[in-house]
Length: 144
Image 1: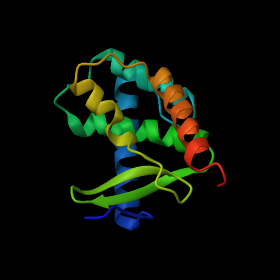
Image 2 (image 1 turned 90 degrees about the horizontal axis):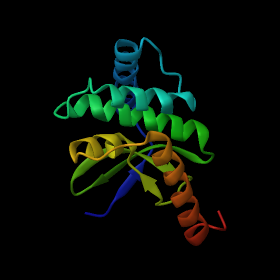
Image 3 (image 1 turned 135 degrees about the horizontal axis):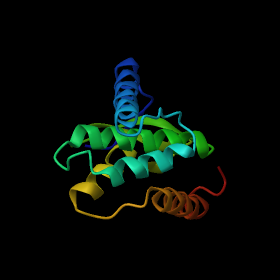
């Protein structure tokens, strides 16, 4: 099946919002602080991860942290927004550069690393992601 990228419909908008709300609730429970989608959320995410209060087995909560990461990315990086990609594996929320095939999947960026036992530096991951995407953008989408 060819990959199909589409704007999120109401169901997907609701899903992303619910996942963000779950992540925000985790932040309030663990840190006593609300998320706001700004760069300071990266520090909050790091402190949540460092707390060890999210079990490796709780994929949904870990993925909600990825949605929080994605929210900061979209808010702080021009020309990226939420989309939905469908392929032979199903549908998933993604972040897309303009109307190109340059996609990232923030929902699983944190959960996969935690499940693999990797140390995560949220700020470095954010900066590194932006740098890599900018290189890809310049190489493949310089005229957009």
